[in-house]
Length: 430
View (spheres, rainbow, N blue to C red):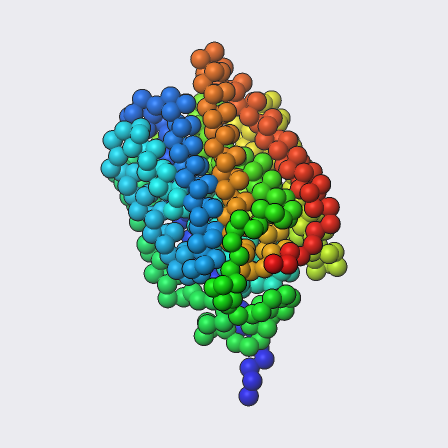
């Protein structure tokens, strides 16, 4: 008898992606929480720290371009494995460096390894989910970024106080190798996996426009060809203008609360925990909203655009952080903006898998991610210059006010340009 009850192994796969993304962001968040300690240890200025962040972003940008095509050619299982090994080793190596230059080098290695996470994860979602479920699946695994950022403000200060800053890097970096065991034994693409039945396989490919089998190597798409497609540029612009805002939330919020509201980063930080918890709600809720629009009868592309416009509006109030009279008002405004970013992120990632065939998804995500990282290279330079200038004038809070104003407008500008590039989104035929 044929089993007609659908299995749901695809959600186990999302669980694996969730934990990988949690570890990814835990590893990159550690340095932001240790910034006050490391500033004293190595006599860093704000510009020194911005250069270290830029080293990460530069390598991350290069790695995204390389890993996107690499994963499309090698496959998600092995490609993800290589990425995780590189970034986990680099995270642990932070404990042995002795200079600012050394931190720049290991941050670059970390950025190179971590760049494989999202191209691999978005491709996995495209392989395992129909379009009507992809935004929700992306929102769920992308919420791992927020959980990593929630865990870090609790875990890292505790390790710092008990074992010192070196062990904070070693312990968090080693967690990735635990995940790797589960990934290697639990994951495979749907056409090869023994844990799914025919009903789930049919559900996964219910709206597919291409063969449900792996393409032959000669059918793989060279990423250079993708630059001639308008849909690629819409994705590139969206990532370029909004990714840097998230990097600011990751790398400078601890320092902002420390300098503006005298938050003690040597202890678990409730304001940071609340902000990054809010982003978890934003990530899952953002994926759910566009999926709900689709199930309500709205066309896929209109649903994505409508949801992203709503989230862009939700970031605007962050400009009022300059008027916050106490830390909790600032936490509320920043929580809304950070949650809206993650809701935006869940949907912009899905736009790539909506319009491109699966064999090109990692390459497109890599190109867009590279653009986001290039923006992430320029923005820290701007942040470092602004903060150092205002710090010398004795008013570092004024520097943060300018930065929050930039954050408030970035998403609406990005949405408008994306809409002008692709007013009527169409499936890309390669």
